[in-house]
Image 1: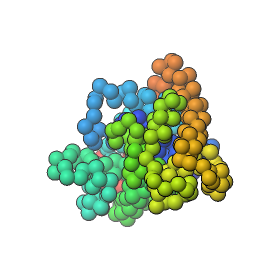
Image 2: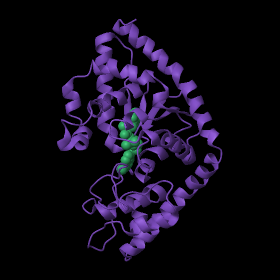
Image 3: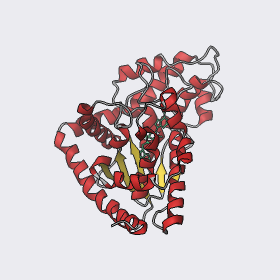
Image 4: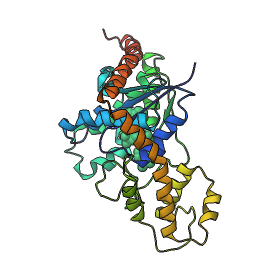
Length: 327
Ligand code: TYM
């Protein structure tokens, strides 16, 4: 049987080029090889302030974007976290088995809470346990993510290992899979920070549904440096980021890309990277328009996803409850 893949994405803000290069396109590329579960994690998105009236439409839009990017709902189970209540049930049971110290080490909590540590919701702190529950509920062996989620997937491994030691072998211990190219796409306005849905700013990210002209404008304004040479040099994050986006989407070798830009200026680099991005996202925009022409299509896909996800989740919960002496 094919190995089980699980991965998730939050319906907060617009899905962007970092999500696409670091995660979604890899899910699509390996879709035929694996038994896949892809989850829209609305219960993760409520760990920070949000607009309840917008949540349902955001979830549906994101589902349509994922299908437009090539997730095939026949081949993969595409579903919404809150449609499967076992995610939150398992979370509590895992929270009781997760040492505080493990959560205190999570760098994303430190970054997101910052100086507001005493005031943010406790869900922001226990967020990685919900993520572990997502993964472990489906007896997942492979978790394809971008670099920023590596620590959380490693925590899921530790939680699974500890649970299996305490209560008997219940969970498959998952492995993170992070592609080398594009695992961390950086913000266009500040290439020292990762591209993120939660950063405001007109010129920070490329949305997967952005119009070609907006993509050109945003890349045209990308922060670079005052040098000239166009090389993959990590010391120069702006140029490195643009070249990486090119490399990830065009599939050309690094050396061929460097040779191509030899003697050219940053203006040429930005123009050409913009065209590579426009071309890569054109089919996504086209297919998004087709899928959303009938609003019931997405609801049907998500309903079917729930039907397919629940039996797997329920089977794991049965073993967990039995192992823990509950019910
Ligand atoms: P999220 O919604 O922030 O991001 C979804 C996926 O996109 C990747 N990603 C990036 N990759 C490269 N460069 C970037 N700038 C960039 N920004 C985001 C993320 O690494 C991720 O793979 N907690 C997760 C969602 C989640 C999950 C899970 C993932 C919930 N449960 C279980 C895997 C397994 C998150 O907030 O991803």
